[in-house]
Length: 386
Picture 1: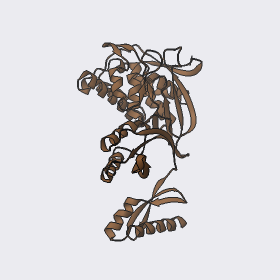
Picture 2: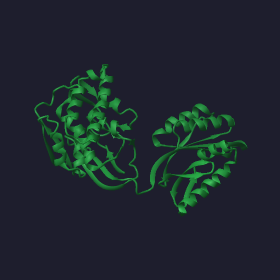
Picture 3: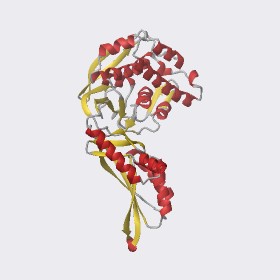
Picture 4: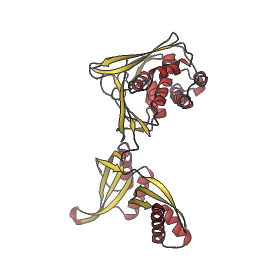
């Protein structure tokens, strides 16, 4: 699977996305042809520039209708009427719908009545469609993004001076890690935020991938403090083990009942914990107790810690980061005399019957669980030997 990682250390915008994709290898002429099919009357330029000594590509849209306001139905009609690849049409419309939902919430009007103002201008339409076309040309199937630098200060818009991030950008970034650093200006635009909010599947550290290409998309300004660039990394994720950073959250408990501990484990799993374990420990004053350990994604550790506080008697938790490496695995189905069982397979010598399948078959057949587990393993080995 082809992966695109967006490194938004200096924010991101629509034109930075397009420039970065071309810089990473997307065909600039094919992209310009696709944008010309929108019949906006605009022309397009790709310029090689430097930001703090680093070379990147700046995408320019030159048009005479840059401030015309549009409604969402009109923009959708423009995209659907152009001879674009179906996936580019679908993703572009998805981005605009996401953007429209945010604008509608900010202004308190139905989405079909939203005036898109700056984001309805020709340059923004071309930025969004251009970004989706760039992903198509690069063959990207999965989009990951770093925590996003949104900038700070204020920005002048149609509605006057607004704080950074603007209200629409802040809504689009809900649930996405963001921070403020560098110059006091807008680094993440609503257009850029809409693309990652609509199409991004994961946020935070770079996923495990074999890098094949990289590129830099340049912003309009040149800052002294930092390079005003968006970096993209393109690569494959199916040829290496799944590596990631996780958070480990721990608490020692010496006055919590077993029933409460069991309930807490169930809640933690239901709320997204990757794993939860309990082990006996000898605590101060020679009290027997247990150590509750929660393995979770970095962005979930504070929320899951609140579950531990709410359900147990602890006054504090320990948390630290750890590396996690998982073998690539897939499901393979085998037939037993009790029914079908899924086998989780990582390699020819690393496999296991799915517990829930075996448990259900054992219960329905009235046999011991170990009998079904043994038959499933034997069936898998026989199937592999054929």
